Image 1 (tube, one colour):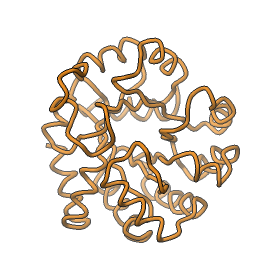
Image 2 (spheres, rainbow, N blue to C red):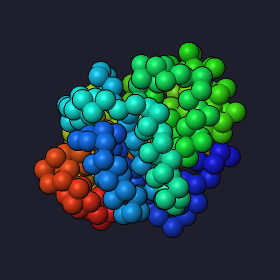
Image 3 (cartoon, one colour):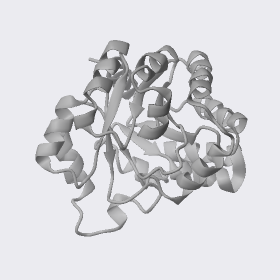
Length: 262
């Protein structure tokens, strides 16, 4: 069992669900984004997803897209991001930090050396929405050597055969997109009636893999988190947290997190 899976399962022993919060590195400034990360880790979020900004984050809705564009004006570098995360990982060993981004900035850094450097920084895994499994053999091999997890995503549109293929390749955890579309819109159960019910979708994944399941996209209330009890292991909150920050700064973001705990 991987270190990330072990951590998640240990945390789940006495918690109905874990929280993964999302912060865009460099938004609204590098220092402010780091301060928000410290706040969230001090608040006890079990997993922190740090997004390194990219100009065309295809899986993200308007809130995160705007934050990425603003963050890029700070001219962040992935090298400094890793240095900053290393300090956070050392200061907050009770949580795990995941690095999320898209292929272009990761290629620019060097995809072959990234897993070892990220593992050295204390990062537990990668979320890379535009990395297809078929093109990831070398990256996966580097991740195995560095003992860091590439976290794969599933959506309600993933065909059963493809789901089995991804589950067979996965380790650590799986990121289950709750519905069609990009981040930040309404939750899975509030919209399109043609879509597979969330319970059925997650049950199908549960039947395919023993890995912990994180569910994201459209989760922004305590009621939505509670609705995932018994269905998922991790509730992922991104745009909802960012919107709270935009309304009221770090204090509002922390209030949002506390409201999610119920």
